[in-house]
Image 1: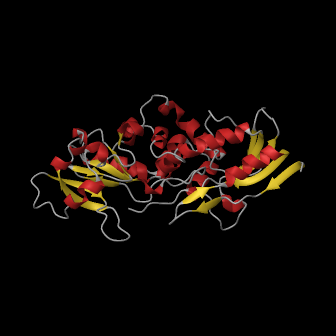
Image 2 (image 1 turned 45 degrees about the vertical axis):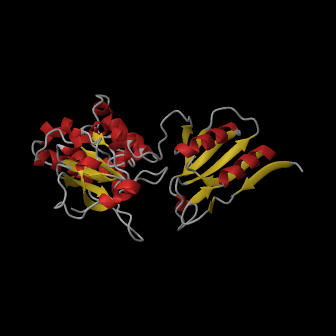
Image 3 (image 1 turned 180 degrees about the vertical axis):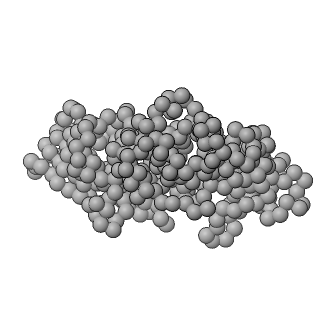
Length: 338
């Protein structure tokens, strides 16, 4: 059989045990591009800004003759009431095409797609980064203050293993000679949740001194942005935690310049703003940590703030955000309450 064109909307994923889903759409895309001179396929857009396991899929999509695509970061624009991680793409393939790949966002032409260049889901992402470039070019960003990544703080890297040491977690510090407070999951019962426990410092034999010697701001990473769409990052409000505190699981710590109330409150107020979370989501659609590169170090603002805390209104005024940019931030990022 020979085909002049193939048009399709393949199944997107299959479920294998519990809530774990496996992508299958890419196999239909590759096969459609292989059997036809031209193919138009509607499928998830999570290859556009790929997570690690999607990099090979992205490269194979490009090598399959990708000519152009239309990207919808918000899948509900095409499929009402359906949330699809990574949005949706309408891709056009032409047999043996190796030219420039043009792309649109929600049918609006944007230019050409290069896998080695930063991809913006909307014009507001580029606009806000351009406004912060002078400070970002100084090379001091909030990423330099971040300690920890997935499973590292309090994890095996620092000497703690949930499987080996969960029985050593205590609700009280009274019976411990060197108590350390740890954010962990004791793994008992169904539907367990992370919470504060105590453990003896001797179990945590690789903890860096700076983690225990200062107060810091704790960020719960569970609310990272949906792939391909700028927006929210953290579900829970940033918390100021005391010395001799560590964490495991989806938690990051932000270390202050000085361990005093104002510096800690200032860091916390920064991550309470919609502006900071919007900035982070631009490049944190797939990885947890690198979005901090988009936020200048808070210490660069401290003289100008003169004792005040960060607010969105202060940042809007400082950088002269357009009304359109402000509206986009306000509408795409939810508020956090004190």
